[in-house]
Amino acid sequence: MKFILAIDQGTTSTRAVLFDGDMQAVGTAQQEFPQYFPKAGWVEHDLDEIWESVVATCRQVLAQTGITAADLAGIGITNQRETTAVWDKATGAPLHRAIVWQDRRTVEICEALRGGGHEDMIRHKTGLLLDPYFSGTKASWILDQQPEARDRAARGELLFGTIDSFLIWRLTGGASHVTDATNASRTMLYDIREGAWSEEICGLLQVPMAMLPEVKDCAADFGITVPEILGEAVPILGVAGDQQAAGIGQACFAPGMMKSTYGTGCFALLNTGETPVVSHNRLLTTVAYQLGGKPTYALEGSIFIAGAAVQWLRDGLGLLEDAAQSGALARQADPEQDVLLVPAFTGLGAPYWQPECRGAVFGLTRGTGPAEMARAALQSVAYQTRDLLEAMRADWPEETHVTLRVDGGMSASDWTMQSLSDLLGAAVDRPKMQETTVLGAGWLAGMQAGIYPDQAGFAATWALDRKFTPQMAPAQRDAAYGRWQRAVQAVIGV
Image (cartoon, rainbow, N blue to C red; front, side, top):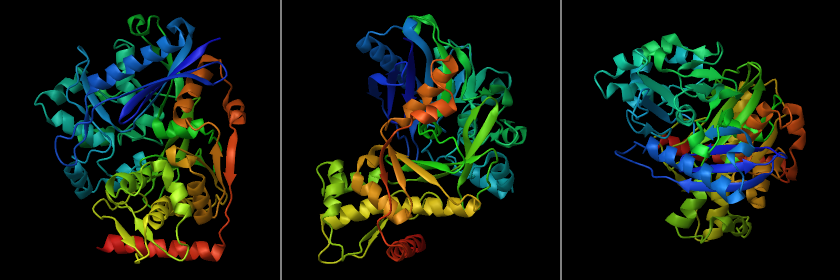
């Protein structure tokens, strides 16, 4: 039996998961690594520490299962998106710490581009908002830090990449400087319609095209690891950014299928098929996956605070001992109280994109207690998801039926998922396999290796744990959502 090694390189930790020939996880290793915050709004990672965590977890999962590299058919990689690396081609040494997707230091670069009238062009080519979130302005900032950096980059002496590119380059001993279409589509340097790096945008940001990786399908030959890392050379056969990997792991292969991942924040992707749908509601147009040279597109919306609202109840207010208690506590809430939490602790994400506004609680009474606050925190996730769904429906009105599949830590709460279904007025499907992100990366590699089924076969393996259907009357749902919308506007107006 051949195995697949899937690497999940996240924002705070790295995991390595071993899948057998039946796509069952047979071993897991995980390691956290430090976060660096040199200034307010700045977030950095040490690329060597990320690399060490990847090597350590891969070796650990092989050791604990007794599987050797010779038993591996391939490696799949999924990664934190937008986090930006620039390194020396000759030595492999990073030019600077990685600038993390959360980092806001390039606001002035974005404002200069906006002031120069480039926003519409960038939006049309990349599908992205002009925001520090994305990699292009981060790369430009790193190149600004050394006088000769751009000349060196133009000569091919410096390389740029997202975390997947950096890991593949190191895993292959510098033989492969590549990425996949999903990660490329998050850089703000990639024309998602042409399927190529944009010379115009690279010119504006002064990011030499000689430093950019080759863009491949999500399932492709990304290179072969050098033997000394795992003991044998192993092909790297699958790559996708973490949110797209979750959509793949949920088998969201048909237009109208939507996945929503509920972790600290929430990321929702709606498959729109072969045509990139232009958003008029400040959603992102992105590559959902690319197979056989053919891109499939998605609309994406991100919510900054989902599970973090429950963490705030636990750590900030001391209302919970454990986040898992939130659903049981919410059930005890007084139905006569309409307490609303707008959790804009770090601003509001899509479709508002109001990073400067802050959170608020509405409807407090003398009778408001922990149960009502727990219900308000969990319902805030449902309301924010409805904001995204309404924006997606407005952007893509021809698609009237949306299939929503959920994953992430919060999806384990039956109360939360029922509340989500009630306030959306739509069915919510929770799969048996919750580790959809790493499964997506593993399936890509296994399919490319020829040991896992094709798209249709993989989709047939998706198994439902529970379907949640709306129990709330439509009039009650609409009235509740109307109160939410008024609360959001109040927060934005402060």
